[in-house]
Length: 84
Image (cartoon, rainbow, N blue to C red; front, side, top):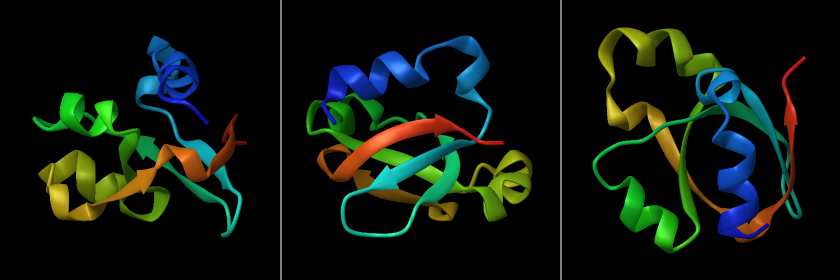
């Protein structure tokens, strides 16, 4: 997916803090939230996205520890869907 497609999907207020399922071409689906840290603009320009896995969201909300996140390449995304 392109940067514009991803940004358009996650930019709505309802999706900013709600889990999203990220479907990939070559790996299993990951569910989590997209987060914005100081490097957000730089990563976005390279179509890289920082995501906190759904298992770590509670801890993230307490500590905001960037080590709980992983960076994914948007080009490997096939689609984004609402978490059910």
